Length: 326
Image (cartoon, rainbow, N blue to C red; front, top):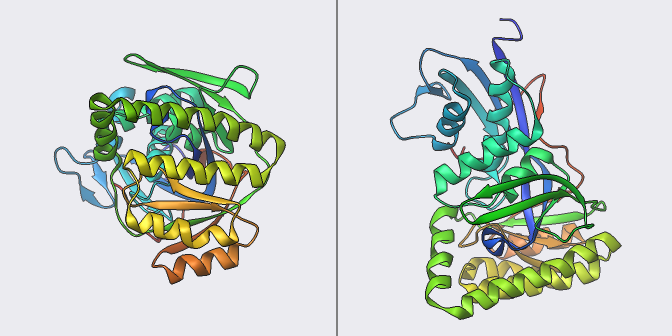
């Protein structure tokens, strides 16, 4: 088999440090790539095959969207990951970015980071019904990105439009930091939670006020990141978590983990859509935070910043630690 018959790609997971949910409505948000990855081995095929099985009708919407947008034939995908599905860590976004790169390389199409990010965003929108480009842009570009931050705070990457919303994506300088992710083990698909917030916002002006406040403190958090001020950033993260709880997207399990790690952290909050999934803690005491998470029923994962984005790989792992979001 020559190099044109098979392509292996990977993309990192991500964590939203500030601004989830409000970013859907054009507010700023900050996300960082993490050093856990999604790997895809892709070949041309007579049928649409995923991990050795013919895909049933309506399944795997992320992959179907990217195949459709690139106007290519069927593919066979074998995928492994160490990113938990529905955990708030960008498993589907990492899948979408890695599939887009693989298809573009396999079918000799232009390989362009911005177009990969657009492919992946469209796949998320198609699968969920509503989305922001923060997950897919982070998994594509890697390192750190901000959405809709003020001019001069970061280097412009691209702009994505959907309906009445416009998101300006910029690259931001992020100091090396250690976070601990606390995974609740609760699968919480993004789509229904995003829809819940939309309905709350439509019927209650208070929800709009919360979304506006999340946008404001996210700007304060960006400045803290630029200064490398972990104490200030941690305080803002914890405040963001409280606002998200008022918005109704946290849960008892997430709140329990957040409260458990605060004595050993600069700050902590849920990450991603909420309802389960994961929380994150910014810390210089990762061992103590991991132990607190274990004692309160979570699964800890130490992650680091400064992670490379989507890329072509020479080889892929044989197994993944978590079920695939396929």
